[in-house]
Length: 81
Image (tube, one colour):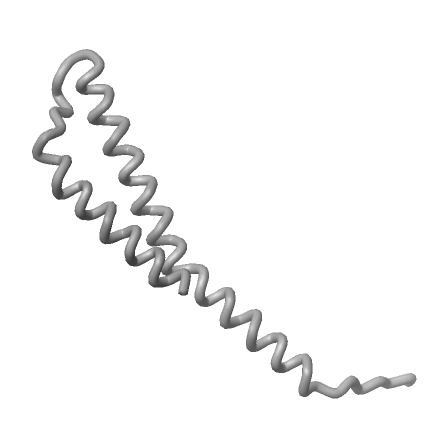
């Protein structure tokens, strides 16, 4: 379920970039140029966060599920030697 949310957020961020990049003037002076740079930086953070969530979260969840299953079926062996 989270993977779909990350994908939707990535697509929305891509659409916003597609719409905004031609209209942003990065080389403008003053507040307009600062706004353009900050907006692009925030867009990069959003994309990076969603990509990392998509790529790294499912593997950790699968590993936890496998560990829980292996602990249920494992028997303890005790040695008093």
